[in-house]
Length: 428
Image 1 (cartoon, helix red, strand yellow):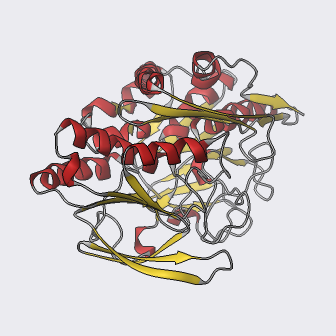
Image 2: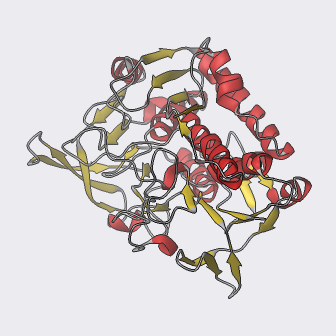
């Protein structure tokens, strides 16, 4: 009999619990430990940030779903991980022992690394969490009463650029609907070396597609940008040359700003030698297994992946939905093999499939594998992407409410894109 614990219940943790439950033997048990009892569909946060969705629209109470699936649910934050003792110490003083641990916590948002960044004591908004997106939606309503310049983008070290592009164009669409677009200058400020880099060195012609969209929508952009400080209504930005020197320093005025932060590992994992890198991200091998603590696996945004290539300003690698789904399926199957006395053989394919909504159109791309060189390198645009993203939201939320473990991207998204050659996992 084995006890498997999933640490975290966000995009990766919740589906991890569902898939792991399907791979267990009858005598095995599974527990989910999470600081938040509610699941929030993160891809909808840009819509929440302009009040196209409410918190309730994108929120699911996980406890009854987990109970129906026979999964123990502990909605209490972890204080400390003891990998030598195979246990989690929780903030309420209790302890959860495990035979196998799957870390699926997502990241900590590093707002404090830049003065004035973020919604907590800073001057910019965020759509990384539904709490932040709600606050952004409130701030946007106030902004519309007295509009002015907008800045949207991602700071140095950021690794999730899709929501920044989405929010830029969703804001632009909403401003047009309110008949105040002519009163607002929008600037996209990013650490990426070029528009459409996405932390992936581009996918297909994302550079051309996104630059064209920005020109068409009168959105200015600044790339290779390092944010040095943010004040109320003013952003200090250094433009960095290819040799790393400061090419130009600018002070950009704004009435509303949304900047995605850099990520780092959560505090209970920080400093555990052999488990995490200096930034706090979990080290895993091709089977999602930690090399030192072999009964610990990890999936999602909290794992360590090196950058694609050096850039003038630090840019991380995103962990997209298909990639996360791929990690989850491989991990569930690998632990299932270990429980049955076999060696793990499953590997995530780490392909990228993305539907980026622009409010009334969008861009879709597929990268196989996510990190170049690639076998598939495709991007397309059109109004169909907006409709597809809405369909994605409805399907995934329904799946989460039912506690289903069916892989969304492999079964649905790829067919919608007319692609049938990407597998969620492969074997050694």
